[in-house]
Length: 362
Ligand SMILES: [Ca+2]
Image (tube, rainbow, N blue to C red):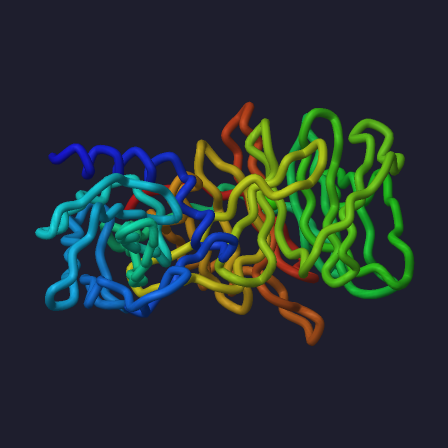
């Protein structure tokens, strides 16, 4: 491993490479040259070609050529918006670490010549190192679930189920008695608010809204609202790892947010072996991974929060055949986990049952 490779591994493993993926510092991509204040770029080409695909752990050969007769005082390589270091005319082969972020990766070199700098970039895609492991499951038991609950958020805390529901005029946050499926306490949202995912962290419950741009904050003990945060874009799923919040927005992105400010700390792009996994919906933090419902499917994906790679998945089609279907029965959505006992619960929008499941590797 070269020195540049080691620095590259550090940059990617740190998760900081997402700065460029999020677009804030994205360099010119597609092999385009960005000239400095004057003059023609001395860089003739850069490889690998834009659109190239690599897998976590793959070597990435980065090469550049200079125009005929051109020289450069120095050429510096950047990956994912991070400076890697000087590279010689032969370029360098970067070893992407096994735990590198998946998704778009911007690579570029800057040539420094006589006080000018010229940049040329390329955009590759980093894919997960392996296809997801298909997990099997067993249904341990089922509980009643209200067919009036359009489930958008689900969590378990201290022997009670907390549920956030959607639809205009019907959205609520509820503490639910799991044995009866009835709400022991219910807080109705305003009629123009469409409730979405919920998460509990440090004695507070956070509840997203779909297109209202508002995250409602409650005291978890009383369910009294204590405040709110504003955000841009849509709100879909929400969960917490004990320190920070993870939020989906219907795309393949999960934003990691500061619970004190709701500011975005970083963004994970979720990919499986086939590419980006969009429509990520309800979320749950389970044993260091993020479980996510994929909207309009019977699939739950298990995401590595450090990289965005889907490491495992479940096909819940059989579970959808175990409920009493009516015209209002909607999609699988809702995952809750009790970290104290390891119990995991699943349900769906307007389903009449909530299931407790156990994972059994097939
Ligand atoms: Ca959840």
